[in-house]
Amino acid sequence: MADDPIRFTEEFPAVSYDAWQTEVEKALKGAPFDKRMFTRTYEGITLSPIYTRQDWSAEDDPSGFPGAMPFTRGATAAGARPDWDIRSEYADPDPAYLNPAILTDLQRGVTSITLVLDAAGRRGADPDGAPDEAARGGVAVSTVDDLDAVLKGVLLDLVPVGLRAGAGFGAAAALLQALWQRRGIAADKVRGAFNADPLGALAATGSLAVPLDHALAELGDLACHTARTLPGVTAVGVDTAPYHGAGADEATDLACAMATGVAYLRAMTAAGLDIDAACRQIRFTVPVTCDQFLVIAKLRAARRLWGRVAEACSAGEAARAMRLDARMADRILTRRDPWVNILRGTVCGFGAAVGGAEAITLQPLDAAVGRPDDLARRIARNTQVVLQEESHLAQVVDPAGGSWYVESRTDALAEAAWTVFQSIEGAGGMAAALADGSIARRLAETRAATDKNLARRKDPITGVSEFPNIQEEALSRPGADLPALAAAAGQRAAAARGRADAGPVAGQAPGDGALALAAVAAPAGGATLGEPARPCCRRPARA
Image (tube, rainbow, N blue to C red; front, side, top):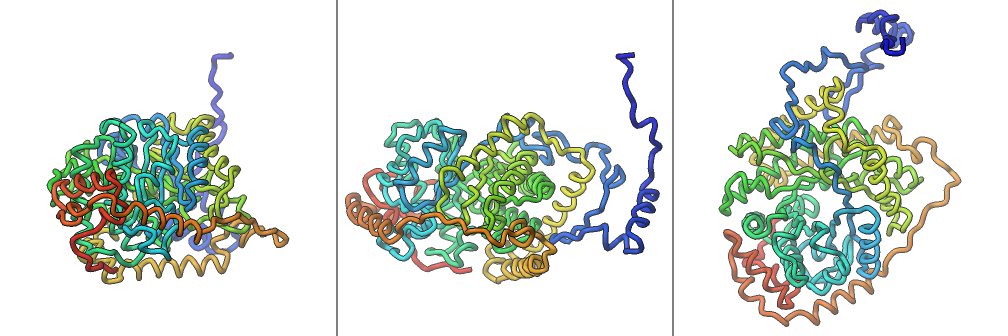
């Protein structure tokens, strides 16, 4: 008897969808079934109250195998990784605070880091050249000595370093390469990402210091240099945070990612890379929210979309696999009742892990308040450690695969995003869509709809519009002395400027990696970030 299986379902007859609907309508007591039980998303997708095998046919396995087209189930046969990359992002302007924070995080679970340059650096200027932007929104780094101080004690042959440098990506990449050389690390040992993303910078700020075609040529040049000399580094990043933060729905966010990726493929192939090598130079970073099923579907749809784009560009199947990272979206963080941000981060991390992200960045609970404290950073990294080591989310490849709901939502989201992507490409591509304002108008429409639903509490925010603590004392975090930090950074840049001749870089035209190769020598000789960044043309580009 002990070996006999217990079949609980045999005592319960199968129930048809129609029978279930009849019972639900009784419970609704006359309220319309269609209006009460179906949900319309911002992407224009209608969600059913229940999903069955009729909603998604598994015949011929349309989601494919992991590591093969259409890559819905993962970029590799083993999933994203045996364990995903626990990443932390640093945007504090004070190097004295930043370095201990980085070392502590690396010692206690973080496996890769991203450095965000200040507003001056993100447009390729030194702190004293843009004093109103120095030490704002990131760390003021203008020399190799500055970068060396921020990363003091970090084992750069073990820890991947990524940059968020906006329009200053070329000069920032040169600084990081010069630091690798100073530390004596072989080119085949370094790991990182330069994340050149001029279209993202244009979308975020509304302008570039150089013409967009020059910025794209510089991107192509950097990609050629990186592909040839740094096998563990990617040159190009597609980060849709500017669009998502401005109100994009998830379909539009994915469409912007695809259109931006296509523009960068064109720039890289024009610079001399073959299509397979160009595809391998791109990393995508998508913002994720605390709607766990939407996050899972978004990441699965992203891989499918990019696989189709790369296939249309004649890339080989292996090169079509998307390098996909997830970052907790800024727009879901709250200043009121910030402790709820712990739960939001947990759901973000869960959805991103199940969706197959290769790296996940969760923000500290007080990130919207000010400088995160030690406890907030600890919780952010430990959330991922628990998901990884105790929940074992990385032990199953595509754990949501086969779910009628998740598969249906993945399909619907991919189709909606593809329609938007086609409209962007049909109108001339991502640059044209930014220039003519069509992207901005689309984001404004979704943002208005979101604001309306938030105001009416149709979209509840726990701790703010739902269950608020009226007696709550606002959380405060001490901020850095920005004027003092900006002045100090400007003094360091002024003292360093002129120690090296940046002339060869200033006169070098982008092409086949020549500009990037020349740029690396400048900071190694003492030049500042603003010196090797000097382009041959200063006519600005505007969105």
